[in-house]
Length: 376
Image (cartoon, rainbow, N blue to C red; front, side, top):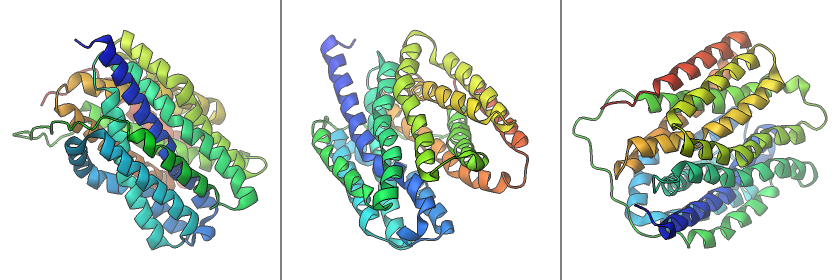
């Protein structure tokens, strides 16, 4: 049974890891806003832009296993220190380098760095079952602070200093949190034992992670830009930056609330409730209630975020927890990587009501399957 002292220490480590991730993220977050709008300034074409923005997710799918093994052997301190340094190098590269090959190398490095930071943040938040949901929610709120500020700041800077100058500031921010990473624990973790007969089919949490990434991080984000492109007044880069920052603001305000609710109630039931409500908003989004449903989706997504790591920790105690968190992240990345591609193919050719109605049904169905734990 955890003592108050160990709980406070776990809370402190979780909070520090969230700060490291939150201040390492702005370079990547701002690139999603600035690269498509100012592709020539980075020396790439629009098709190359799409490949660059997908590269970090693709390398995570391939490299999460290696990152998890490094994390298990070396602990949070070394893993997060190297990842924060890599984030600083990538942000500096975005500010100074041009061309597809150079930027692709930076995106691949960042993908592995994010995998390490994301894994450490989730693992520390769920290190103790007691208060895991509360820590997961607070961690998401702290992590979202950096991207929320980076998006409008990046849009404003692009108008007055060009799209690349702001990345110098983001490189400095990542270097600052290297000192925070040095305060994380350095104890290694037990590597999860290999399964004798690994399941070939994804479990219910795997399927929900994939669909959540596909719908909320792919179809919704691209659809908001595509369907609302004629409704953006004034400077598009500023308006787009503010719209995207609202998503992170919702995480700051509401992710902790989702974590507190999961500490008091069954997180699987909460996941189904919030996911079904989100599905209704997704369907309404496709039928034309763009801004009201977009706001509802942003709010409900923030409440959903801390629930999945909590469920993973409850259903996979012991050394297998680290590998289970990795598996969920891989499935989410697969969905989030495929979502923009699917949106680009379907939105010009298929009515939005069909696309988002089908996505809503898929999200609700996979969420309800999570009520019954997957048995291997």
